[in-house]
Length: 637
Image 1 (cartoon, rainbow, N blue to C red):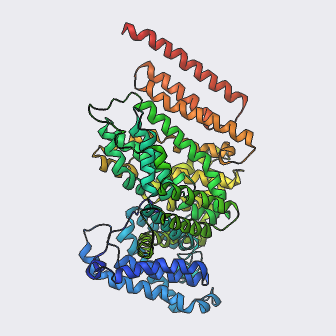
Image 2: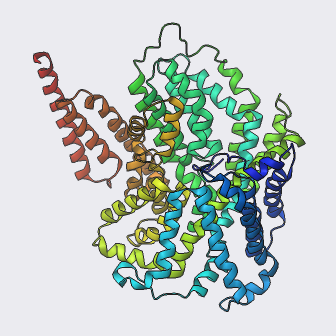
Image 3: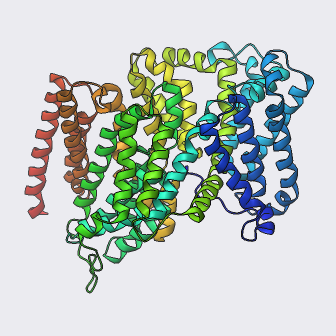
């Protein structure tokens, strides 16, 4: 499982020079994985373990991972050893002197201040080197606010001002700074889920998913695109990452869809929309869920349960939309989608099937028994390893070393993102912006919840275009989550709203990273792909508002109400999907489409009331009347 902006990092220059089989670069990344495992059984003091983890990963970033852009690689090659050493010294200072640091909180020494300034510089360099301009500029804005926010008036969030000593030491030594809850979540949870994903991949779970999709849909005209939706949804349970899904499944599904007659742009859009749903589908979800655990002070199991219904609704809607658009698909002569598909019984009885359902089902069952998420993941990993001994892809010591090393390598860039995120969350907590902004937003929205929701959605969407989903979720949750709960919105609804809104940017122009990757694989036009993916992903744009007005969508209510809301929401999403057929007719057909889409929207979002059903009925009747008029005019034209 990898974050949506990372994938598998490229090997850096210094690691390439020394990596001959098992070299220092591999040993360093393997050491990161071993530390995460050992820390589960023998944890250190929180500040000390986070600092040691940061020292290892930041040193590896500069020595093992290549810079994002090769344009200035020569410069990085010359400075990387210095920055790696600086990372070891700065974070090693905390590892060595953690006891004294905790005792002198509020009374920093000059050495504390110098190391604090050096660490902020180091993280800014890491951001420029590997994390992209969007995150770098966001960090710069929040740091500028921390340094100069005292010049702003109160109604714009101005603060009382802080000295350089206070800023540097708060961000460096305080557990609310760069070594805060984000890094803690990375250390405690992310490696274990990365390791589980690697184990499932080795034992054949991903092959099982692709075989299952081909076997189930081989007799349907729209088999290939439906298989793409199913395989990406199931694979998301393993990877939990949009871009990883596209890279893994898209290289198979996109060429297959094109071969049976699907246009390149639409094939790429289907894969992008399906892969984007991977981060909302339990039990793995995306990395943002680990931050949600801490911010909500709840369990992983509770969040996974709340995500079941909206995640299912998303994929049910996507299935229906893709089926409507491809049900009349005619494959070119001589092309048979079902050729080579294995019998369904053989697929379901494979070791990959047992590993997939056993690991994920067992993990959810153990968490339902109130077992910690780390223990549940480790037991699920052990179950996969034992089951693999009964198949051809046996998991042994050599595979274990490889999985630990590769998981540690993927964790490097993710940890760098978590550390730099501390330069955003730290200023929010230091300046009290997380308390001031909700009050300001409440005033600006004039007490209207729907205005606040629109503002929060826009903020998530803007941040999501330049930042990883998990990063934009944390920022907006800290800034706006309190304002939403002050209106009476349940905490789970508020945080799921922010999470979905941040995800929508991944398939929406102008950035749409997931759509860009899919379009590259399909050799398709990016803009057409992104817009079609946006239409396919309609639930991402409207379901978040439903979380607020209909908390039953997050399993908050009686079973009767949950079932009723689920059925009504499904019907509304189907109506919005079906409206596309009328939109393509042009003329009065587009009026019909607008009326159907409006009725579908009312079935998904607003609170249930008698007036709501009257509005739905009126729009539906209008759609029928306009459609009849359009049909009568069609023969004449």
